[in-house]
Image (cartoon, rainbow, N blue to C red; front, side):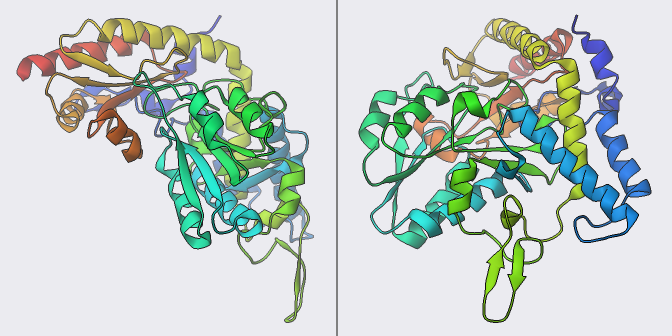
Length: 404
């Protein structure tokens, strides 16, 4: 049985107070808290193993290298990639997408070509592609969505042409909680020979992801959203695709031989990993993924599903409550507005009650314009949240509503 109180004991920060109130942390879509096991792994490596990886013949360097490369295998197994050659360590989802946008743009995109993104993308899956399109003279096309927050796949069919170089889509919307039909999107794109990038930043913490099942060509996620440290993430790419693309950055580690006349590049995945990696963070990321595995993703999914349904049921009883996003497939994110109360006012006052939520446009301004709003309040749930915390949130919103 899933014991949420036992889980919470692994996260010391959850026992603290804010403004004299017990912390209710509901901003997991922005970043998750870290269990003791992750933090202790980082402390242990800095105190006992710290040495630069790959370059040293001495004991500590070899030990640190072994931990770093073992972490790559943990990531490979976690997302069911075929090979560790397909696992590139980055600073997070944003850098992963910037890497791909630059390298794919250099290799494949010319004037008049097109890149397809969805209407509900985070800025990190819009701006890098815009920058590439401006540089190469290409066009950005957008998959529209319904008022309920579901992508219109019939429109996608018309967007896919001989000029389309890649389709980029989030698996789970960070605003709406919509779980997109990425397998169908991949199938549609592959039928026309078009590669697909899936942004998994909001899906990896909440559901099992399988690269063999999804069959996407590229997949990106961040460590800090799945109980790992900040500053580390992953770009998965099918080996055949990564072999075709040029490096994103130059420097140490990504080279095979260097002369002043010519440089030859290292093998995968190191071709895309210039400079010293955050080898302590990669080790801690592996600890985080193992922590999730030990709890069981199916148990986490069941807990979060029950919690989200309970929250939706309770929130909808509040007078003036407006839930933003009504997709049939929905994950552990609820965005809302209450009456005429500004989202910033609501978030600020909830904070004084010890409740941490996110307010604003959530790095998705085009989506806000599509919805005709400036921003929302967002409560995002995780494996350590409880129904009692949902009750505190509901009571807090009611208290604030009555003030207005």
